[in-house]
Length: 330
Ligand code: G3H
Ligand code: 13P
Ligand code: ZN
Image 1: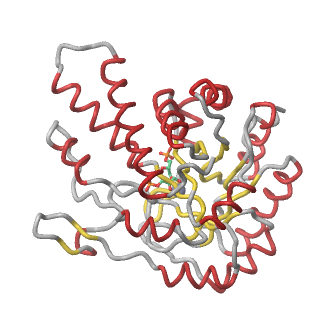
Image 2: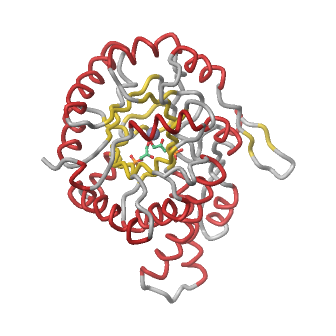
């Protein structure tokens, strides 16, 4: 057993309380490799933002849990070396079983998500409560989820959105003891969050999605005042990145995300953690595709992963400063 404190990590409890009171959200950026980690830590140190390093089941399989643990430990020292010891949480994204959550707690994670949202309500309560019971013994924070987001939620996928029912949240939080709650108000995972027929189109041909259900968020806030809320599926899918990808051989069609002004509004509410993965994927892919087209004779991976890392870092800084409001909160 490695406890997260041995790695220099923190859990999310205090960070979330401060974020709810301060009217900002902490970034939860997914990572699978060294370049993503360098970009995240570089961006968060430069902006003095706390951060959740988010690891999915897919990331564990891709990168290996032991390596990820030491990368997170390395991130703590790397931040200090860059000049500012930001608080770093190592978080399991969309954990689907008690066993997986236990394994992560035992290998140094300071926060886990148990996503029982695809289960019937009572089963979701049961599995979430079991995870909380185990995790809290080790001072590890737990995120639960009520309501289902459309798109891929790890290995579980849903074609349609099931909005969170505000009348369930109080009971869920009380029965499970979770520290934060992910809700479904119209965001979804991936780069195609809405079908074109759900959107309107601007004169320039840009798709404008329907607004998030802030009425549900407000109702949730009324029922559990000050309780930390989490927003998944919060990538904005910047049209400029999609354009660079497609003009360098990519084939992304009808990609559309959540407008930044809606995320700013969410960040100012009880939403204290905002999950962003797809925008990072787009930033890296845009830079790599461009580097391949611009320098076809180049075959040193550092020559295309380097620009990808730089573009990623700029994207993260933009999110922190202009969308989430978490700069200078570390
Ligand atoms: O919610 C899903 C995250 O974007 C992680 O995606 O399971 O492909 O690593 P992944
Ligand atoms: P995006 O696909 O919108 O980046 O959402 C990521 C996410 O919610 C990870 O849990
Ligand atoms: Zn998610």
